[in-house]
Length: 413
Image 1 (cartoon, rainbow, N blue to C red):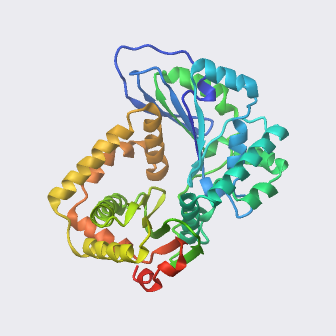
Image 2 (tube, rainbow, N blue to C red):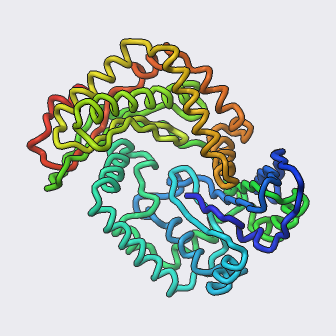
Image 3 (tube, rainbow, N blue to C red):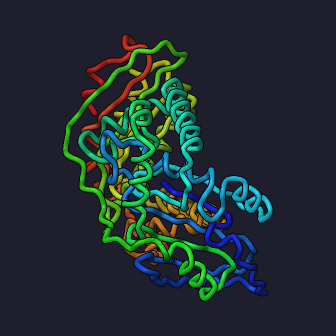
């Protein structure tokens, strides 16, 4: 889970530093076990500060799903430095935005007061959100597919929790978790914006640097077990049927990571052409790539004719595994990736996320600068090879009319 701050709690009182030109020099330093990455960007006066609490779902158990999310969402209701109304007033005065979004490999914190009434209000809202997701096809299919693909693995846990776990987590458990788990050795602070290193160091030393150090060491989650093919069907009367299947991919530090990213993009484009454009079998079809410490790929579609769609998907996967993609076509695709990369890193917040992902997944924030080069190194034979190596043993979730789905077709994946 990541909390994104236009100005983080530690920087709410930091004065703007005016400069004539942009300076994107990136430096790193340590404060009491807290690793800090600063990218100085003087092109604007917005400061993005993301505080990552490493571990994500690895810190959870079946009974504690949602605990960190409950803690962090409660932190929005007031902190020790800025009680509830003070938080809102300061954020409004400075034009700050505080946001929390779940992830499998990390989470984020402030210093919440954890008032019992506020925690119960957040708990009720989270339970309502879980119920809404159960009644919404796409969130439901995504949750079920993750659970099926990662049986016995931390990625199967729901960062936002389940209704039963959210009801059972006590206020004491939340407070104990804050005391025991909120340590600087679990934290990564990434700041992008117009702030000097000396000023940032002072702020961190007075705030996050005062948190106990602890002895946490980040490590990527283990590879998921090889589970083989699977299918879970949930009967539902819907205007269309939903199908999502995942297969296991390489770790982020594996050279195949970027090659599989490209291969899934090629496959997604072919699905769109054959299934949506030419045959009008779906309004939404994709070959997703899950960008995690341990990746996964898959196929997704919502369609009234799942069998015909599956036949086309199988044929396109076979073609990708058998034939090399045209080098010119691959070059155009990679160039599109690069264009999207720069578009997605225009804001300070996006740059902070990209640096953090490189630090956490690759062990070095400078790996972010190699992203473009790594993509350009992917060759047509790499695309075919990773398609053959990874695109098998799909684990499918199907939501819709069960009579419309052929199990024999599923077995071919």
